[in-house]
Length: 429
Image (cartoon, rainbow, N blue to C red; front, top):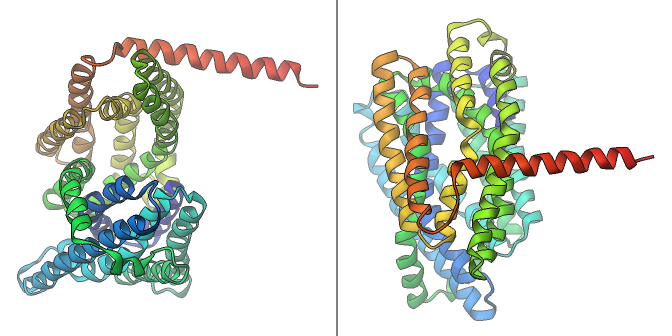
């Protein structure tokens, strides 16, 4: 789905102005941050209390999640309605767009969100993929129609986004993926159980989202929506790096969890070093090629109007900065995951908070020194170093590993894979 997001961004960059594109990115950032409150509060709790249950207990959990979801959505929409009375005093277009479009969009994403959590807990990944394809695919289809009819602008794109959410939610209801009728099977005891668990899990979720979105807020308020649109170009391209990273995490986490639960502590460290090291080794040549071809990548995503322009140069430079240390992302992510696996979620939460603080300080310093988005991109190195440093310090108390060991293990594993591939080619007729 990251590729679909890049395609959507490519279409919009070619047909929206920089200012409108910046407002769109800011809307997605604000919506994503607030939606993280609902998702962080309920999704993990649903999976924890629902997975493996049957009959009345399963209905009770889903019904209780539906109840809390409706309450959270209603409260946030009520706050949004109150914000409408402030529109006359707001002169920032990006903020005005968020106030006008947040509530209605938030309402129609509730059914599809709960349906996706249930399908994830039931491990119905085929249906989950269908839902996401329907949602993203319908939005892209509406955008293409707007382009060909000559009616594309910020407002119609927001309408297309809303229409995609409405269609997906209607399909989820029609296919009974939402299990809405379980709302009547809720219980006060289960509601409180979900609530007390969710109030803790939501903190890490929001902090993690703030770490990603703080750049967008700071850029919008200090440099304007147009600058945010420029910064979003390399960020969209970096989303491609998330594809193999997410896959390696999805493969490595169950192995590490199983090893820890069986008290094979040494194996936990070996598995972590194996996957983090292999992906780091694989990303080194990818990053080097990306650094060399950064202007071309920016042009492919954003269109010819950015090639050779000041904005295009800034975006290409930011992409090169990101790629310089993107090859080391797996180390940070696997250290964070490992802290959770060895039952140290508090340490991981502190790690995220420290990274957030470092990121905010770095962003303000970068803009003050460079006066453009490249200063923000360069400042991203600071939270990375803080996260790896603190995470390494805490995790070393529970696992015997080293940063050098990650590189060494990764090199060895990649070498073995290449030898196996070469041997298979030699044996092939």
